[in-house]
Image (cartoon, rainbow, N blue to C red; front, side):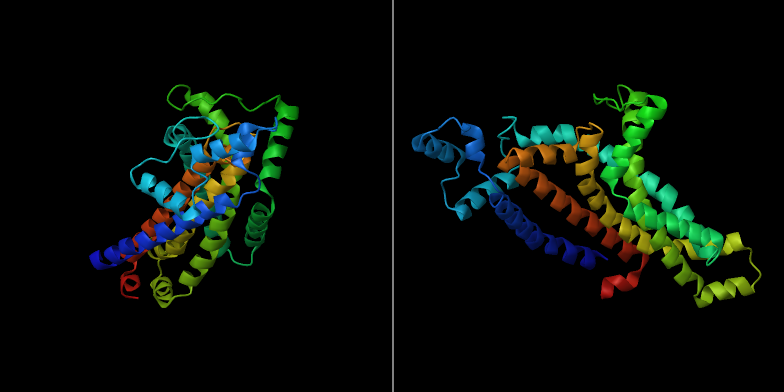
Length: 315
């Protein structure tokens, strides 16, 4: 296990470096120029533009810009935001807790939906309950989150006069207001992930239920609940854990759409804002952070799978 962990950690080094190069390069290919936004369209002279480029270090060759930027990142300096004129890390400290809370609530919703419904669908294969739950999963995958969020606000406004809070309240300062702010975006994001979990749970459980040791358990006359809980569910959850690891990163990506609709000042809202402003340091920092987070989640998933299934360590 230690050798497997060491190999995976060593593999992280070139992975992070490659990601940093891609993130840095792609930002430079965004349409428009940050200098034109900063100096405006008020007829800035060429000298003023060159002065601004020099101040931002954008007049240097791109490989030198990358070396300086990545060297600062390794020292914990993510740069200064061009739009807020604050250190990017200060902006992220305020945004990350909001997105973390939203993602955790969405995962809870997804598990509450996906695991029981997927289990029912598997043990009642080809029944009306199976067809109903599979239709629900297809609907959850097909309906776009932004449309569902818009319809939720529209319908609740008409039916109950409910309008989403426009000012963020911390869970420590105002728990009920915070719950009201997060419950609807969490359910909307959780529906999509729950549909994926449900389909994976159904497929995995059906495969486990066809194994010989399950037939042996049935032949002993064990009750259905005992066979499922003691012998089938644990093994069928391994692929679900893998999917959840991937979905955590995907949830952050979908938060870019949902957070602005519900006025949540999280990372998704921040990404949307800084991309529009061509805020290079902020865009680079957020994307590198999310990519590193995704790599870390995948590592954690691989470690958990290797722990539960020793065959993975020797492949």
